[in-house]
Image (cartoon, rainbow, N blue to C red):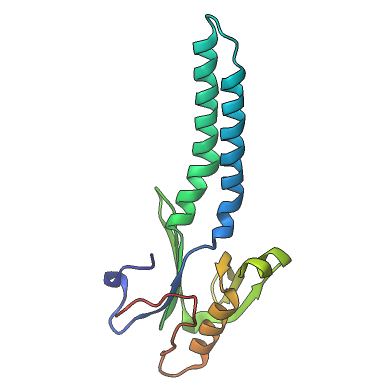
Length: 176
């Protein structure tokens, strides 16, 4: 998880690194359980006869497609997404086949805010909104674990002179 040290500039070090909160996997897990249950039920009630094998393979194929698209794909997206804060920039990386990334230099950040709904507060996550001096205007990072702590780390980095900030508990720092 995080970013490879070879992608960091000279004198740059990771302060905090995290991935999207596990909350993003709740719906895919529910879909997986429901799909397996329905597929198992349909296989159990299939009528015996000449069409049994064809119907069995149709049920298995449909269940497999649902699991791949609605369960495996979101899991891989979750697994490959990361948010990293260094002493110089905020790095957002995601994508399975096509990797996408956005780096925001700390000196271009104008505003850091977070949003937390009731479910987010119960699970300890939220959405981090970074406003910066660019054409895009802002970056929205959904389902960030310990969002208040990460917001505090970024805010402290913006106002510190030496770029040294220790990660709060719950966020992982990587060694230099």
